[in-house]
Image 1 (cartoon, one colour):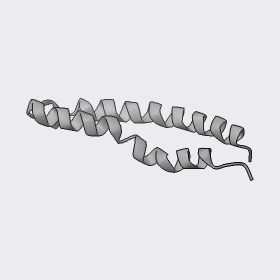
Image 2 (image 1 turned 60 degrees about the horizontal axis):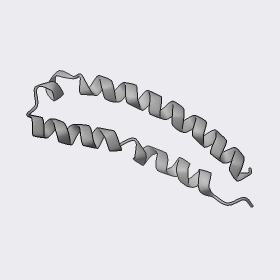
Image 3 (image 1 turned 60 degrees about the vertical axis):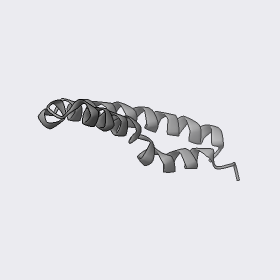
Image 4 (image 1 turned 90 degrees about the vertical axis):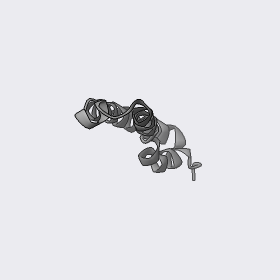
Length: 69
């Protein structure tokens, strides 16, 4: 498969994943324990939640960057 095709497929998958992830993150952010937590803990929670989407997508990004054979 050519790199251009992999990048197109990867972009579609990443877009879908980020949309679903954002919906789940918003639902978690509205949970009562998060809303009642101290502000410092909320900041940590939001920072972790904001960066956690990168880890599941790293294999996809590596696959997208493989050179053509």
